[in-house]
Amino acid sequence: MVLSGTVLVIDVLRHTPAGVPVLDFSIAHASSQLEGGHARKVECNVPAIAVGEVARSLAGKRPGEPIAIAGFLAARSHRSTQLVLHATQVRD
Image (cartoon, rainbow, N blue to C red; front, side):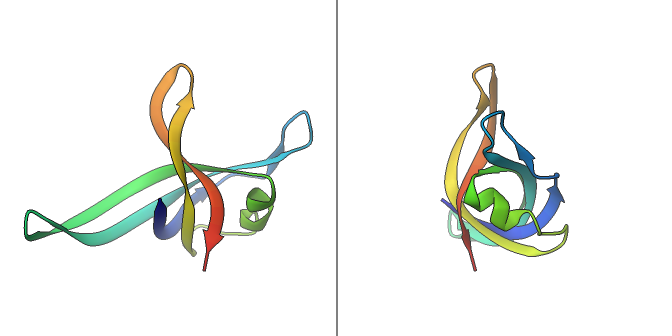
């Protein structure tokens, strides 16, 4: 999936015990979509995570900057059903 919007919140780049960079952030998305033949305004805030080189490339982003991310949705953890976008690619 691809999601575009603006950076809402971005945490400090951290590293796993194995030294892999990890970055938690969220994206504010707003668009107009067709649903049932009618335009619908869509607004949402999506939590996201990036790992490895993608995390490094996003580490310099600031809130309010435009962003487009390709990735996949997965549960936050084994105990949570909250979905998180796992960024696998930054799109320009």
